[in-house]
Amino acid sequence: MPPLAVGCILLAALLAASWLADRLPPPWRRLPVPVLAVLVGLFAAETARYDATRGEALYWVGLVAAPVVAIFGGAAAGVRRWYGWPDLGPLPGRAAAVAGLLLLGVLVGGRVKETDVRVTIARGDGIRDAVHAWRSSRGGAWPATLAEAAPDAPRTRMGLLDPPPFAYDPATRRLAFPLDGRRRLTLDLAAEGAAWTVER
Image (tube, rainbow, N blue to C red; front, side, top):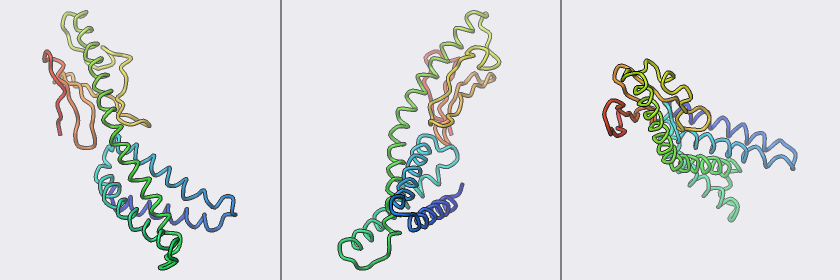
């Protein structure tokens, strides 16, 4: 999805949450914007763990626009609270809260991704061992599918909601998993002691 479209969706969600916050009774009016901010932060963290084809939007919205909105929106909210002028209303402060959680989600998701890659590599090494054991019991033949050699093969841990599965190519005898929308790590199962390599 283009970064501009993502930004427009976030702006529309913020305006809707702000409109709702201004019209709910006092016990509930504090909820819409914080709930939106938490949801946006969680989605940003999940996207940072595995962006699929959303890498460009993650960069421009999460790492470029979000800090700018958080800084200037927070500054506008601060001067409104402490000095009373210029009074731009509650929207800049609400935008800063959502942008701050968005940025935090991207940063936390990026750190978690490092662990995801290590765990996924370990799972891939286990699949490699299962493939080699399957070949040893069948005279050196290669499996046509990964399910033949490792029917209980785990998925990757690239994300939490829907992590992509490992890919196996019987022609090249390579095991692979995506790092993001443009790169993947591959392992040559036929080469003894081969290491995982990055491919685009």
